[in-house]
Image (cartoon, rainbow, N blue to C red; front, top):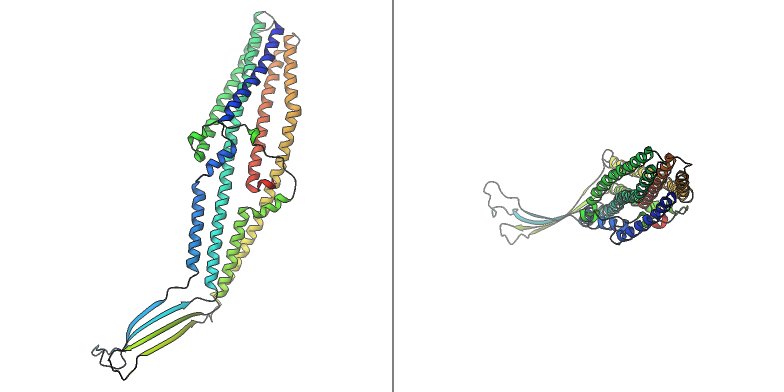
Length: 424
C-alpha cells in the first residue's frame, strides 16, 4: 500500500504539470500581453495629446511673434483756431492723414520666432517623456498582475500535492503506522496554503483595479500572459547605452531649454540696438485756397539706448546666468541617468545569475530533498516533519524563483524607459 501511495503521488505530479500546461495554453489564447497593455494605454492618452496640442499652439504663436507690429493709421486736424473753430478761417488749418510703422530692434523678430519654435520642440519632448512614463507605469502594473496570477497558479499546482499528503498520512494513521499529529500537520499546511491564496487573490484584484485606470475595466480583467514570453534579451555591456542617454527626451528637453536661454541672450543683446519708427503723412488745406498746396510729411524716429547700465546690461546678465543654470542642470541630469542605468544593468546581471542558480541548483535540489524525505517517511525511517518541510521548501523556492523573475522584468522595463531597446 505504501508503494501505491508513492506511485499515486508521482502520478499526481505528472498530471498537475499536464493540467497546468493545458490551462495555460487556453489562457494564452485570450491573454493580455505586456505590449498589448502598453499599446492600449497609449491610445489617445490625454496627457500625451495635451502636450502635443501645446506644441502646435507654440508653433502658431512663433509665427505671430516673428511678424512686424500692425501699422497705425493717423487721422487728425492741425492748427484749428480756437476762437471760432472754423476750418476756413486760417490757411494753416489742415486735415491730416498719416500712417506709422514701428520696426523692432535688429533681428529680434527672427529670434522670437526661433524661441517659439524651440518651446514647441520642448513640448514635443514632454509628450515623449509622458509616453515613456505611461509605458513604464503600465508595465509595472502589468507585471504586478502577472506575478499574482502566476503566484496563484503555483499554489494551485502544489495544492494537490498537499492534499495527497493528507491522504497518505490518513491512510498510514488508519493502519496504525503513524500518529494523528502527522494528519493534523498536513491539514494545517494546506490551510496555510489556502490563506496565501486568499491574500494573493486580493492582491491581483488590486492590480487589476490599478491597471484599469489605463486600459479600462474590461481589458484589465483579462488574464495576463506568462512573464516568460516578455523577457528581454540579455544585456550587452557596451558603451552604446551611455551614448544613447544623450538622446533621452529628458536630456534633449534641457538641451532645448539651453537653446532657448541662448536665444534669449541674443534677444537681450539686440536691446542695445535702436528701434526705428517710420511715419508718412499728408495734410489737406481746409480753407480751400487753391493758391496754397497741400502738405506731405515723412519722419523717422528711433530710441537710443544710452542709459543701459541698469536695464539692458542687467537683462543680459540675467539671461546669461539662466543659461549657465540650465547647463548645470543638464550635466547633473546626465550624471544621474548614467548612475541609474549603470545600477540597473548591474541589478539585471545579478538577477540573471540568481535565475540561473534557481534553475540549475535550488529548484532541482529542493525537489530531490522532498522526494527523499517522502521516500524515507513511507519506509518508516523518516519523520513527517521532514516531509512537510521538504514540500514547503519546494513551494517557497518556486515562489522565490517567480519573484526574482518578476524583478528582472521590472528592471528591464525601467531600462527601456532610459535607453532604447537597441541599447539595452
